[in-house]
Image (tube, rainbow, N blue to C red; front, side, top):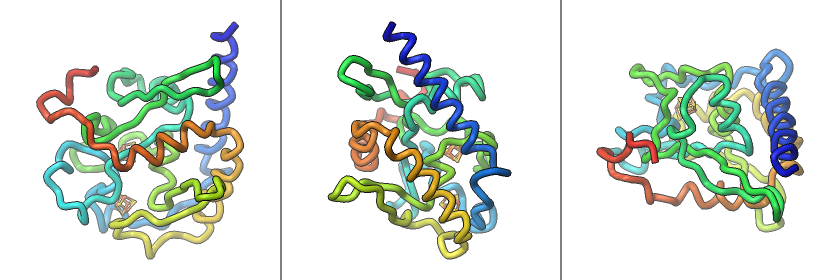
Length: 200
Ligand code: SF4
Ligand code: SF4
């Protein structure tokens, strides 16, 4: 019974991701000049460990519920490439959500520092340098990612649409996810580089 509910929830989220990632209907071009101005400062990779904090834009990607499974289905990667955290969807149902960080660096970043899964990359990636957060009133709020050299080029239509996408998702995202999301930015408990490719 629980497995049926989880499967149904997963299919609901998969459908949301399909709709969000259909760019022709939803998210317009960002206007960012990533290829011209940046070396993927927002894509977690081991090489970031030696960089100064002002050189990093975002060393962590937090996936939404079932977004890890969505990426696995779309790309064929193992779930071991993701850091996984338990998330209580309900008191009875706990799932794992995925993260990429400096201990589980993004497997989708090419040697030329380009995203190889742009057509279905995570919403956290697609949203950056906009950063959603929960304010003190537990309402959805926004800030801009520090150290993204493209911020000034952000297309205002992109900003509007991305905020609308998150506003639509907001009632569907469990509180526990926001707790992990807030915590993940400050978490540094990743393994050392020589341990990073062992899976778990
Ligand atoms: S979003 Fe900003 S930090 Fe990320 S690759 Fe583009 S320019 Fe660089
Ligand atoms: S999925 Fe793509 S955009 Fe996201 S961190 Fe990996 S390479 Fe960067």
